Picture (cartoon, one colour):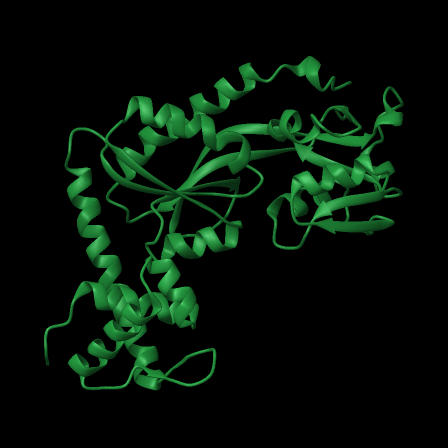
Length: 310
């Protein structure tokens, strides 16, 4: 067998994941012809066909499917070798691939990046925003080092470290300012605006409404917290959003914000990583920075700007 390169393996892994030459090339930051040529050279080196060509989508051959699993394992082992090297250093340095869910990233990320850059300037930080299920998958495949998500995720292969708790606030049309705050039972009789299926925040909001026994009278979906707030501003219903998102998402919307009576709905934010990761000590240090960043963000946010009421 001719020499096989890690570059070829990486390109094939991207192609196997995306099932499309164009998307795989974009993910690898190379031209489509360059990626195609490397895949062809890999096939020649292996002496076997990896993909069925033709049409917009590509399909792996039987050999290609088996090779994809082995190649993914090889690439993960190479990554772990780099992780062991980083773990042996006295200071945090090198690449850090961190994932965040969309209901956290826009609000917490800038402060986290700023604090990490000042405390650990040798870090090369790569951020990935995606839903929890996707982040868990990429952690398992070795494409992420850690992720910041809502806990629990209850994956036996992952370590979970709780960082801080965050309340949910009620967002209503502006003319409802000062009116009594509905209970979780009352919310079930209202038009409730929620994030679309797949967002853990949607499930947490529905849980507060105690929807196990009955669904809210009417539920409308959106793809982002920003859209939810604008829908409320337009008078389409009410919604719940995480407290850290309130100053950003409500500053240009005609809405009122209120706190629920105790016990308030909330979520626990934490970090997760593979139990086998050699970077666990370093990731614990990162988790401390994230905790301090969340506290910094709380201090910066002026509660009077959105006037939550008891």
